[in-house]
Image 1 (cartoon, rainbow, N blue to C red):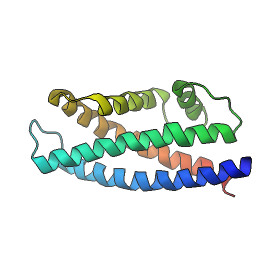
Image 2: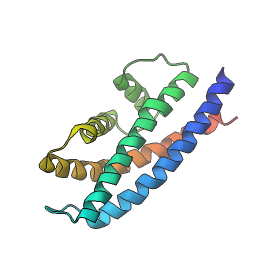
Image 3: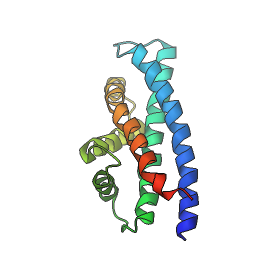
Length: 148
């Protein structure tokens, strides 16, 4: 079973790498655009892609990769908060509080339609993306021990 989980983890790490690459691209592009009171349609489209990629990468990390690492480490399953706390203990993330905020923003991205709130989401996603990208690097280092 462990061998099968290791193979699944390698596939998820590839998916993680691909999602990281496109998020980093969007982060750099939107950092150059900056926060404004009014966006051109192309800029708004860039930010909407960016927030979607942010949400996707956070899902891959928390829902797939952290869960697989817990299984490989023989940790019991629990809530998302439990998974985030274990990730902090394993030093996969710098701060569980930051990752809880990332999860909350991820939920806001999926359900927010008010223009003023969307602007706030853009600000938060720009601020939290470095923590998300840092977690990816930490996960890659941690998972090196699971290479088949």
